[in-house]
Structures are given as C-alpha cells and as structure tokens.
Image (cartoon, rainbow, N blue to C red; front, side, top):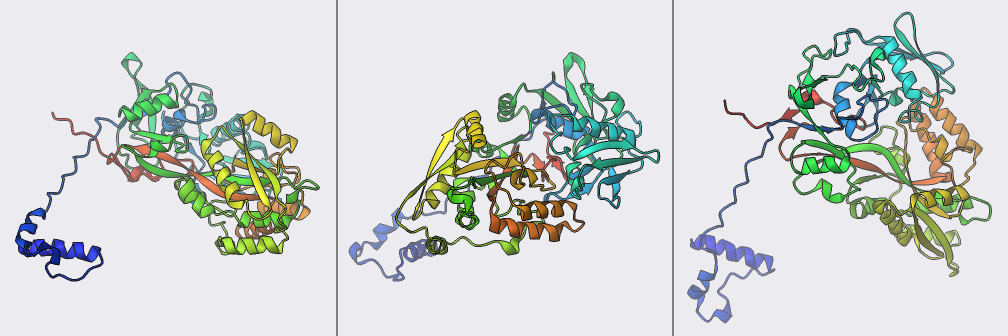
Length: 519
C-alpha cells in the first residue's frame, strides 16, 4: 500500500514540476493524517458494454420509386441498386478505373473510337448472359438521362459490334473515358421496369404484405463470398426518414453528406469517409479593370489560402485540402509542385506586388448562403486574406440570386463548388468558352494544355504540365475536396472501405455481425 501511495505522490509532484519527495513542511508532522485523503485502491476499470448486434442487416429504399440505376435519383435508391447492378469499371480510392464487366479496351489511331471487350461468362440474375447490346443500350439511355448526360456529353454514339464488343465514338479525344464508365448496366429488354435485371450479387424478392428483400445470388458470376444471404429493405420516403430509421436502428447503413449536419458523424454512429470528386474553389472576376485581371495577384491569393487550417479546424476534417484541381489521393496530383503556406512570405510577396499602399480596396466575395459550411469557409478565407490593401466582404445570397450574380459578373471573387468528372476535365471551368467560367478567363495556352491532357496517352506527364501552368495562371484557386460519410452502427460491419462511387467496394471482404437467434 505504501508503495502505491508513494507512486501516486511521485506522479503528483512530477506533474507539478517538483522532484522533492520529502514530507511537506506545512503538514507539521501530520503525514500519517494526510495519507487517508489518497485513494487506498486503484479505481476499478469500467467494463465496456457488449456490442449490440441487429437481427438483420437492413437497408433503406423507396418502395414506390424505380431502382433502375439510369433513371433513379441520387440518394436512397442508390444503396439497394448498388447491390443489384454492376458497371463496366469501378473507381478505386485514388479514382483510378478498375475493369469489372469490361475485360480490356483499345483506341483507334484517331483517339476518337474506343472498343471495349467484355468478360466472358457474366450473367443477369435470371441466368441470361450479358451481351454487348445490353451494354450499348444502357449507355445510350445514360447519354439521354438527367443523371449521366453531362459526363457523357462528348460521346456521339455507342454500338454493339457483330463480334460482341462495345464501340464508343467521341466528338473529341479523351483518354480518361474509362473513368466515366462506372455506370451500372441493366438487361436492355427490362430497361424501364421498376427493377430491371442486373448482374450484381443480389436480386430483389417480393414477399407477402408487400415486403421486399435482397437475396444473395448462388450463381453470381464473380463467385465470391457474400457476408449475408438476405438483406431486408425498409421503406423510407426521403433522406430525413432514412436518418430516423438509422437512428432507431431499423436500418444498418446510410450514406450521408456530413456537412448537412456534422452530428451525423458522431454519437452512436460509426462513420467511414467516402472520397468524392466535389471540389470547392475560389473563382476570380478577371474582367478588364478588375483587380484580379492580374494573373500574379490571382496566384498570390491562391498561395495565401491556409488550406490545412481550413480543412482541419473550420471544416472539421470533412474535406481534403488541395492546391490543384484533382484529389490528393490521385496519382495525377503533383505533390512536388505544392507550396507550403507561410503568412510572412505571403505578406512579403504582397508588398513586393505593390499591395501595401495603405489604400484599402473593397472586394466582394459571393457565396451561396444556403450551404452553412460553404459560407463559413468563405468567411474564413476572406478574413485571412483581408491583409494590407485588401478588404474582402462576403456576400451570402440564396442560390438563385447567387447564380444570377455570377452570370452577371457582379463580383470580384466567389466561393464555388463543382462535382468534377473522374477524367478531371477542366474545360468548362477554365476553358475560354467554359459553361462554368463565370469570371471570363480566356487563355490560348490553357486551352491547348487542356486539349493535350485529354488526348495524351501519357496523362501523368500531360497533367503535370497543365497543373504547373494553372498554378501560375490561376484562373481559379482550388481549396479542397469534400468527403462524404457512410454511417453504420458500432461493431456491426468490418471491412467497410467505400470507393468514390461504390459504397459496397470489397463486399466479399466484409464481416457483418448479426444477433445469434436461439433455436
């Protein structure tokens, strides 16, 4: 006991910065009477509660809406659909396309025609074989759909060849096409039905009383182990209902945007990050007579954004800081071109650029006030960069007014957000006639480098030349890429590692813990 008491006192003295272990003078010999105030036994460790496992691994869906992956909206329906259908390619954690239904692909000499060869032995859930016609018809429907039309805007035709290959023709070369083809494929004869046939690991079964479930396929062409045989589906009319079902443990998995409500990724939920191609950035008005018509000042502004502090403190690590318009996880991200943030260097550079005259320039930064996180980020950047001659006023507008002000050019700066396609085509954002180029940036060298990047067989080298140029020209300033979250209940799922467009990536490696039912 005395050894234990001595150890406690030693620790207390060391924490106080004192190493003298003699009896305190002010106790006047009352050392023995002082001891009872110290605990006689170490506190008992509290036992962690046993994990609470569900009886079934249930998922939300809307029973009155289609599960057709081409026409269903983003959100709840994507969850169940992801287990029914499979794409030609999947994106890994670095946004690199990994062949799935597609075995190989080849380009013609013009770079305008890509021929895809499908794997052999793939079947739909009714046992019928997947054909090139199924793929071609699905992609043609996708070209005309609200969900996929933008990413396939460069595709002029998709056909099935007599040899069983899929031939895709483009209007302009784009070697990044495979990264755009993570589009789920359905059997063309069932297209438009509420639940078309797919090649995925599960199929939909309807039971008595309208209850529906996903049933594991015994004949799944991949032949891999699945963590559960049956997945009950629970009706959720909207995302708010799905959140309620998750909070009451009626469903076990739910993808969310944590910036909608940061508390979603805390509490009783286990949150796993999901990378996205959603980039937040600062746009500049480069019109004649505007401060940011000067490329060197735009580059200085970009250099002056403390992205790491913004990501860690302001955005609670819900984003990845990025100095270039590609996620840091991508092999295309040029880490060797990054410049460390330095306030002193920034101020020196601003003074050297003549931005220390004492005459304050009032600048306006627009942001959509409908997104609280975006608005907070805009205020953070404006506050940090209101140095020397700059005074940046953030104007928060409702979305429609914000968009109208951008189109009218009524701004010096704006805080924007865009979902980039996984080929990292920046033409609309920084090309001379880009539809998202609200600041009026026009540069022939930029246009040429954008084209060379898309058409180059070596996109790694071409991307570095493009990003080096953009760093100096600064048509916009990348800030960060957002992460989404996949929520599960603690200890229920092991092995969850969602990809950018695939929350069930590596499903065969998952372990799902369910309550043991006593016979």
